[in-house]
Structures are given as structure tokens and as C-alpha cells.
Image (cartoon, rainbow, N blue to C red; front, side):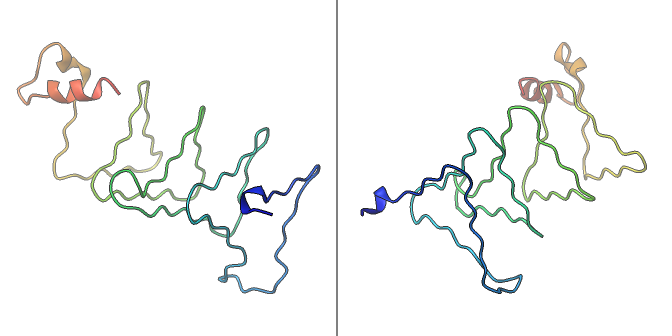
Length: 140
């Protein structure tokens, strides 16, 4: 049998269970494609991952590799005690509609320079040339 003809077909469910007594930090299952993509597809269902920790690591160089992309046709929701994000060079949160930032107890904002720009400078530029910033961000 050729490798490209290797296929499992199940009419019901499939369970793969690793029975060896590994410690928590040991790798129990390893799935690798030396070249090409790995596709996990649930045509009419959900994909669920559950573990004590889940790590998504993308390794690559240049702007086209080493990226993690999350795309949803509706919502991306996070629910946790803390949400920590760190960008080394740049981050941007953008919406073509409305946006809200809410802190019900305390909010700290720190920067060496803070520039607030409203859409009012679209018709008449300010002395600080904020119209340039308005033009860049009005087509989000």
C-alpha cells in the first residue's frame, strides 16, 4: 500500500487513547507532517481542545511566516481572570463601527506621548496636523 493510499474510515466515532503511564510533562502523542499542512476539519460540528494548558506556537521568519491567525465570521470571545498581551513593536485595535474600553474600578494609561484625534479635523486640520491621522484611520 502506498503512503498516499493510507486512510482510516469510520462510520461512528473514533477514539485514540494513550494508555502508557506518562508523567504530565512528557509527550504522549506526536502528529507531524514534514512538509505540507495538517487539516483538522469538523464539517458539521465543533473542534474542542481541552488540557491543563494549551500552547499555540508559530515559528518562522519574515512577515509571512511565524504568525497565528484567528478568524471568525461572527465573534471571538475570551473569558479569563487576566488577559495579557505583549507586542514588541506595534499593536492596533480597529473597528469600522463602535468601540468601547471599560474598566469598572481603575484604568491606567501610560505613554511618553498621547495624541487624541477626533473626526472633527476631517473638514479643518488642527495646528498639530491631526488630519493626516484621521485620514489614515478613517478607512479601517
